[in-house]
Image (cartoon, rainbow, N blue to C red; front, side):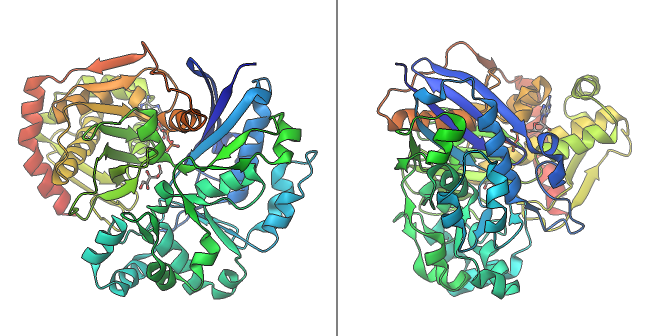
Length: 507
Ligand code: ADP
Ligand code: XUL
């Protein structure tokens, strides 16, 4: 009998699964939340809100999506899947009442998961990583340990609005009764793992490190930080474990409903970035990647904990259980999409007009943040341009957005001391050849891109499960493209960095 594993990616806009075996990935399947489950009213996987700082999603939608995805892959040899690992968008939290574990353990395989779990939430919506409404709670957290530097030294991050600790603190502050009725809180990753395990699953170090309550050096919750977020928070969050720890065997519900073997094991789920790092094979210290998903993230593997950290970078625990450095940009793909929609273009139209404008845009620059930005910290949507009035064609605007975004990625990576020798790129927008070339030219290094449609997050999760069952991971052959930088273009961009920095600082 063959052996397979499954890797699942519960991302911001969609959920995907990859079937993986001795020769690497075999099949993949994706479900987009907005398209497949329009009844939840999400746009880009989140609930529209008039306040741009409040960004939530319905956890019941994630439950239904997981159920539908696994039903849709029933033709895969699920009975031969020996382990499942997964990853989810980071930081978001799911609030469960006292009935969750009881209902979960008694599920009937004949009814959809979401119908049976509908009454289990003590909070109907979950804040996700795009939420930036917790400034007050962030300040409180910093002062609870004696300031920003101390918090960064313990947790590897500045107090960050989207992080799980400040998000829970705001809920406890504003809805103390609902908080009191919350028996358990899980990260989106450990919530999904719980559904497959049939009981509350622990959170892995990778996702715990995005909470502002985790001691990254000692790999454990930091009790005083938990307490300063909300009463008895440690009890509600449960324990945390090393990435890909085996949590137990799969829920009998999933055996009966989807056809898994009853001996299939469930590994701890992690965050999408820690898993993506594994999927991209970033093992050597200094290997860097730029992921162009809903968020853009720039990340690198580290051998050791850095001694000090610039305020806009985070140290997380990677899927390899090593430190990783990460910067996150909230204005990634959806901001590029907004520019495309402004001119009613397809991506091909977009690329055609960009190709017809000169590299460097005759010095015209744009910094556009349609949602509050994380790197740099910009609390409200804002747009700043320079020289675009003189070059007001669609091509100039479309190019200016891409060039501005990538100049920003280089500027902030350099501020963390990250100067890659080569850069791996991944995420939905990495399919775009114009974007790939601009990245190579702005950074002045070869860019490696895997032309396989497979996302690095689901692949990373699958590789974590595969390694967990003691098998060697094979490199995917033949689908890699290398995009070389054009030296003249790199010079142009290097000269533009200072002007871009001033533009960014003017917001
Ligand atoms: P996430 O994992 O955060 O849900 P993905 O990595 O799946 O996101 O990326 C989805 C994004 O990819 C979409 O928002 C879309 O704008 C972007 N995208 C898809 N195709 C292209 C393209 N040809 N050019 C630029 N962006 C694209
Ligand atoms: C990382 C971050 C995002 C989310 C969604 O800190 O907030 O990258 O993980 O992808």
